[in-house]
Image 1 (cartoon, rainbow, N blue to C red):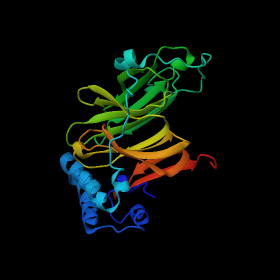
Image 2 (cartoon, one colour):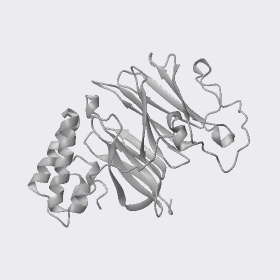
Image 3 (spheres, rainbow, N blue to C red):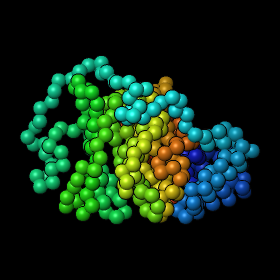
Image 4 (tube, rainbow, N blue to C red):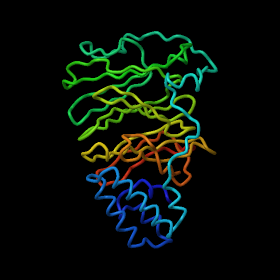
Length: 302
């Protein structure tokens, strides 16, 4: 019932209507949600976060349980599985080493734009507002006895006529899924690779598209699948990334959360369970009206 309260900025959204059938939406809350919708595309990072905290405070007097949903995600001592954290995280050892794979002749990119003449285990792509194309691929080397998995990111600055290998990074646990999200507009611009690993860590790996400066952060733990999207303010410090993901609790329980404005896809808050639903094959999209749309299959019904 409370699934979308912390993830919506639309006062007349059906999720709010359903969730508040047994309580009164105060005039203050109505005004704050209207302000949130206005700030979504024009507000500064400070104004957006101040509005979020004001909504939390207003809910305290109406329903403290809803107010409690507005909080940072506690990731404990989890660290991204980057090379920098290898001394702490250690090396991942798979329970079973798979047999080496052989290349199939039919598996190939367009011959005049071959990006990587090797087997890969997953790909994703995103395009910036300037038309720059980013394509990511990862290799599951650990499963086959290697030391590290590898993420490659290729970039085209001429509309796909040519590509260069822009980034490559070792991952110290097997990658299971990866999605790219571009933070672009007025201000600092970033390319983020959101990924899950065999250890269950849902992570954000971020590169500055101008300098290549890198940083990484754990979003949540015990995650097996996810989907991400972002909103569309012009200023990049007002852009937030939203996620839906499966956490291994009593089942593969579907959760949602969002990053903090001004953090460029980092500092995740407001993690909530979607009605304690058990699901699979999660995906989501952000709508221009300020709502987040999610889809997933039933864990048992399919």
